[in-house]
Image (cartoon, rainbow, N blue to C red; front, top):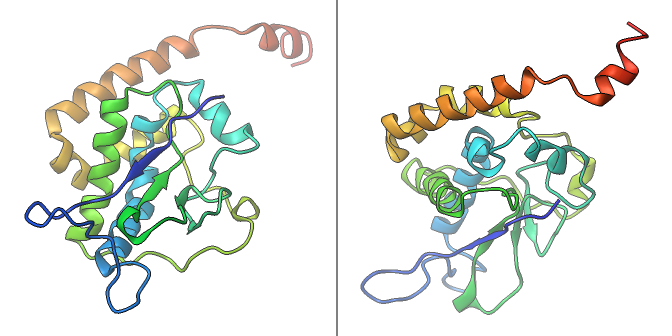
Length: 196
């Protein structure tokens, strides 16, 4: 399925300069690594915003080019978090989790919340993945119900996004999931009815 990749950088409100730029010859700043660390830590808990429908998880689980992990790498498209090669002024990270079925405002807000929590909590990112990240373990929720459970357990995201909002959003998505579970698919009739 189609995706909605989100490119993010942060600028200083006073100077207008990208705060992800490294100093003294460094490729990126410490703040950038904390932002990446936040994305790695919280995106699995925020997946209900990036994959909001029961069908969304087919893209992630069975897609040949969709992410299955929260590893990061320079221009490494096998990673869920790709850091494009560009000029220092354009230092940014691309999250590759959201599908084309998302509400873009919620996906962007959730992404920023994850990165913000990384900076606030000074979370260190893992070392860069330089190989094929598809060979790593699956690190994301595998279903909408799993994603909603993980979102429900992550109180720091509730604090940022709003407790009332997360509660209402989760209840709506749980209702949608329950309705989906009431439908017997043709595959189930064909493969299970006469064989189980």
